[in-house]
Every structure is written in structure tokens, then in C-alpha cells.
Length: 310
Image (cartoon, rainbow, N blue to C red):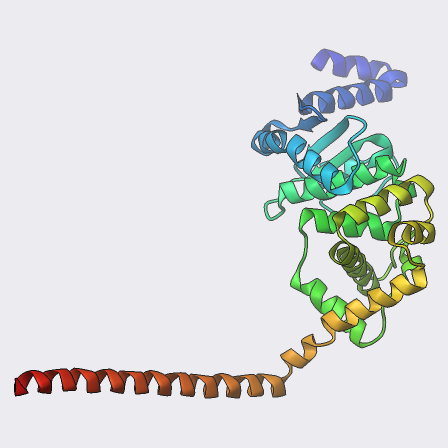
């Protein structure tokens, strides 16, 4: 190594080239690689356990997600597991910066998934989320072609990433009539945090509505039609036999019916009313039990006295 250092000092013209070569060589050897049927997984030695868990489950998860969506995985995918945030950022394609809160990202056009391994992050859920993006991206022929609400909402549903905070967000939007028009979250999500979270919630619940009301098979037919022709209104009309205006009315009615009662249940007046009902029911149940007990005692006494008379 000392010899190479002297050479570099003596030949400044090749110093930068040699430094880049050794940097690339070092990082190439820093990753270990393993193959599955669908994936090439790159990881550091310290992440061997996480990589093994992923290797054992990746193909199975992919087949399950593929069945849910109705799209097969058409090309093999590279998966990189990063140990630190800096490694996570450095693994991204050139010119790409990822938000500090992100723990996973998918590049369908590159068949690439990059995951940041963190203590409190569920590796399998993160992978399931990202492979959903890959499958959608391949079917829509590139991430850019997938509607944003569909891409994010479906990934949340498939990965099981529901939370109480999303329930609160969608309830507030329904009660204040501040839902976002679907066309505004097709190409991108809002930049501010509050509306971005609402966009995620709406995406999640709109897909839940379609799947719940019309069934999974119809939803897969919708996805197939949508990915083939890239026309949302036509896909709705051909698959569900109604125009978007009618579907939107059904969707808004579903939201109103499902979420407008939640604040009523959470109100102080309702809680006192519910407590009173529970108290009254408890009183009568206890009284009935006492009456049954008294009847049982009467029978026991009658049995004893009858026995003495004999």
C-alpha cells in the first residue's frame, strides 16, 4: 500500500483515477451476494441474518403479491440491503436523493430495490411494499406510468401498513369536506406533509373500497385494463360498468357512511350515554342473577325441610 501511495504522489495525473478505482473495488467487495429464483440480494457481512431471512421469504412473498395484483414478475430484480443511511443514499442511482424518513425505494425501470435496515423497521413489510411497486411498474412499463394513488395505496394495502393515524386523517377530511380530487393525486402527491398524508390515506381507502364493494377479481380486471390502456375513466367504465361520476358518488357515500359516525362515538356525550346504558344493563343482569340465586336457595331449603319431615 505504501508503494502505491508513493506512485500516486509521483503521478498526480492518475491519482484521481486510481483513487476512484480503489474506492469502487473496495465497495464492490464490501457486498456479499446471494441468489433466489427472482432476486439477486447484495448485503454486508453484518447483515447476513437479515439477508438470509429475506432469501427464505422473498420468492414466496413475490408470488403472493403477484397473485393479488394479477401481474407476474417478468424480470429478475436486484435487492440491496444497506446498513446505514449514508450507504442507503449512496446506493441510489446517480442524481437521486431520497427523503430522510424513507427506508425503502423501488426502481421498476432498473429492476432495483434498495432497503435501509433499521431496528424498528419490519424488513418483510418494507420488501412487500417495494416489490408491489416493482410489479406495478413492470406491468405499466416503468414507474412513471403508474398512477401515484394506485402505486402507493396498493403498496400500503398489500404490505398491511394500516395505522390509527390514517383513520384520524381520513375522518377529519370527510367531516371537513377537504378530500383531494383523484385527478390531483394521479401524477404526484402534494408537497406539504398534511396533504401528502391525506393523499396516502385516500389512496388506501379508495382501493379498499373498490376491492371490498366489487371483489378482488373485478379489481384485478381493472388493473389489467388500466395498465394496458393507461386511461382511468375508461378502465372504470369497462370494468365496473359505470362512469366515473357515478363511481365517485358511491366512493364519497362510502366514506361518509364509514367515517362520519366516529366523532359521535368519541364525543363526551355519547361516552356518558354509553356508560349509562352499560350501568343499567349491568344492574338488570346482576338483579336477574340474584333472583336466580334466591330461587336456587328456596329449592335447597324446600329439599332440606321435606327431608326432615320424612
